[in-house]
Length: 488
Image (cartoon, rainbow, N blue to C red; front, side, top):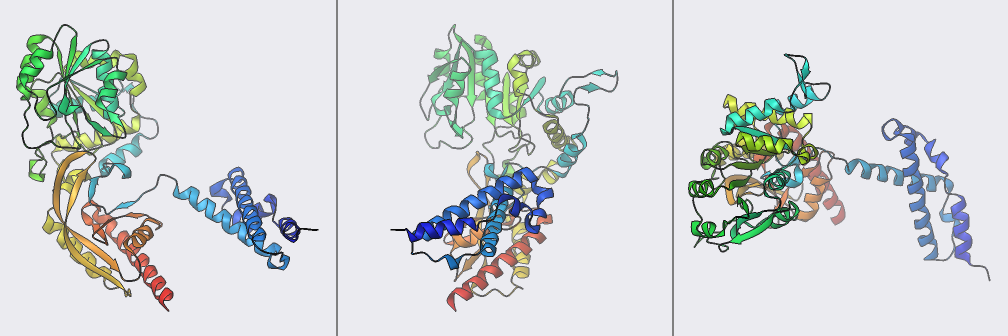
């Protein structure tokens, strides 16, 4: 006996558009300059494949009804699927977002936003540039020489080197100076910094042997004295960054460690993490190591990040004694870890801001951290007034006391007082509103607390406010209309 579903499926499949038919439509044709013909053909075949599977599932779930399909309806469905697939491709690209989370150094959103000067420098260096060329003598120059001099000048170090991130910087230092030897580290500093980056694992990969001393909360100078032996090559001090031990704690002062390692003839190496180049105590960041203090305090080598509290591009920076820096530079691993001209340009322009002493106003991370609660409250109040000019049924907007965080593994537990904009809807859940914000043409990344969506203007550049306002207006109006329709 004939299967009516199989017959209908066969008839429906014959009406499916071909790849060439879809590619020749005006809808796909208009996108070819952006998509490219070969890529468009791949997406068209995927769209037809998805439609074929849906047809089979639909027909097999009921008795045959061939008249439910037509060439025109299937062509329209295939075009819709092609459009959805292309939108997904575009959404998966690296793209700009507006960060309203209040997390200043947001790792998932690219950490430190770059300054205007850094962006201009990146554009200027994007073509041919003097990356390894000396204009004075017309010969090959040393890569990154100008940036290294800026770093040394700011930190007071004899020399500096730049690699692609802080983990790479620490790995390089340990590979050069600790391979085959012992590295002494306090148990309270054997941390996992993030993304499965663990200090013991880095030590192991560098060829060094870990020598744990002390306890989680207390490590004394005498613990270091007893641990150092003929196999010891490095004493490593690690700033915990993303967690804090409080209460009954103890660790030796940096000057004490420096004196001990000098006497015993081993290197003192500090992984300082976030890279504070100026004193940030007035922002509540009194526990972040100041790099210049580590250098002047006798540390032989210090590593830190370029895209956290420093406020520049992703980089790992090594500073310290000149002869040690040159040893690292000559190691084959350095070439594998060095950075591009774009990173040097952005980092150099950011460092210039510190030397001009205008970093607190020109480097976005520092400017954001420096904003007071009252300054943000004034901005938030004006923003809410303008947002309230739009009629939105069922939407409640209010000012809420709250806190911003540093992020990026810096200053755990430290919050900057802020004034938040809270958004509630009687017709949509907070997660639905938050998703609508993320789905905007320029995505807005917010946070949800206490059953409402929160907007923190601390992490919004004032030049972004107009765009943010338009996005929120259109999004909340759409949510309002959708809720009204669903209740009618």
